[in-house]
Length: 203
Image 1 (tube, rainbow, N blue to C red):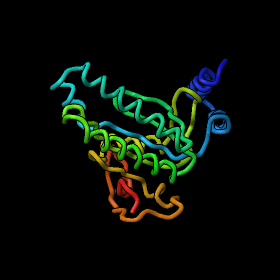
Image 2 (cartoon, rainbow, N blue to C red):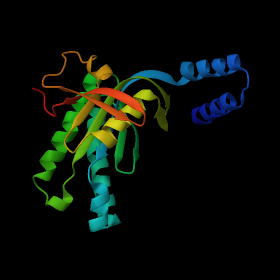
Image 3 (cartoon, helix red, strand yellow):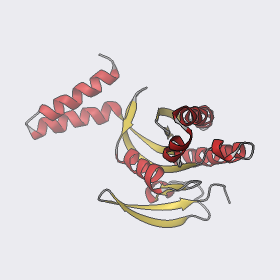
């Protein structure tokens, strides 16, 4: 079986195993074979439900495609891995937080520059969430873990248009820190997230 099939098989065996020590052994195999430490970036296109309602699904999908075409080379340019596009979101991982933040800033700059040359109904505005930690990665398919969940919450639910939100855990890993960061705390889905609102341009 391939990696994705093996991953799913191990998960099923874990869910069906009654003995705690055997479940623990399966979990250790999953982390050994699929675990990795990475910075996670989640990008969300802002206001697109309303845009689709106003202009129709073709307009919406065409702008999602433009987001994808813009995001992919920027992610690649910082040694990132584009994990997936899903609806109007981009999910990526990077070797470190500095690379993830640089990519997020370049993404904001790229769309801001493009918006100067387009009418309002073609403008793309994004929000980004960044976290860091140990995750499970199924190559070419998906990734999972607390850092993925928190980056999703920050990028999709909590960051506004033009914002970058980063967990405190990610921020402390920045090589030179981050000037102008503002501490914020969110309570969402029953969890607390200590984060910082990061300027979209280096100061």
